[in-house]
Length: 381
View 1: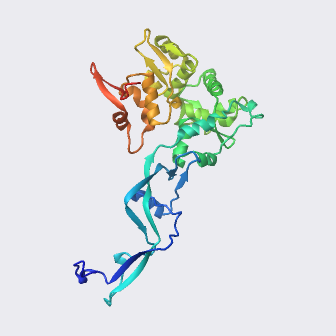
View 2 (view 1 turned 45 degrees about the vertical axis):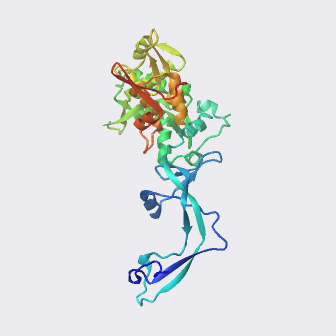
View 3 (view 1 turned 30 degrees about the horizontal axis):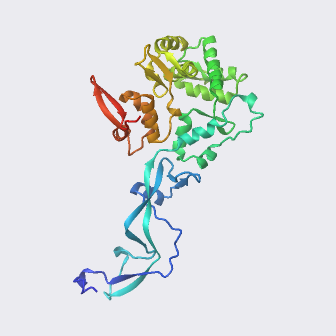
């Protein structure tokens, strides 16, 4: 065969491996998955990957920090599985005697799984936690609703541990008695009001709120752990500490103003913009400045109506599917500027698909009076 192939015998290793098929393949349950170099190196170093998904979900692979969609890919080449094949650097035959080794093919593949960077399924997380919101200690005695620990959520939500931790923070979930819960909005408003009233009654500056004094005062009204988590959400820790070791917090202007706006907009439907701005400015603590930029992803303004109006339009209520998200956005407004649409699609991005890629793929750009607008590629919307 060497001479028929017109090869130089001296250029070849002196071990020839002859591949033969098995009469009965024994690896029917084996699947191939393609990994990039970084994932492979982590796996070889002992990292643990988890495949997650319920029966009705498309499977995903999760590392400690990222989520990947698993897709089956076909190949025109046959992939042969040979458990004991030797590579050139592994062959040692110093006596230069030609040897023929028979190697058995134990399986043949015509497809494999490939991984694509994917977004974690945060919508499912929010849906699960919304089934049993926390309304206050007085409602817990008769509460038979499902509650979830962090591990429970890891088992059912398609997300890595790091992504799940971030998602719980982003949706403002609270850890209560070992379970992750969402606060009922009216109950959250009550806690928030207690904090602000206490700050006001003690004449504490909004950038110097003593943590322990606040918690000690309010723990007779509401569970201490909930008040503390609310303080850490609506305020930022400063570097100041008093002689007793009490830490000081500063109210986060954006979060506080945004929450007051939500209180006003949730029940209002369409709100006269001028009246809203006036009312909103009067609600927030003295020293804070309101701005419509604080409401990105929470509310929309309509400058085409007379008078101009604003209304509650949270991104959390929109579909998680990219196609359905754009359909809903263009059903609400036929044209969007970049700044207006950005907060409503930024959560759809992945490492391979940023906002500009999404806009190029799903929208049509046009310019009117020097302003760039994005509209639907589907004329029927």
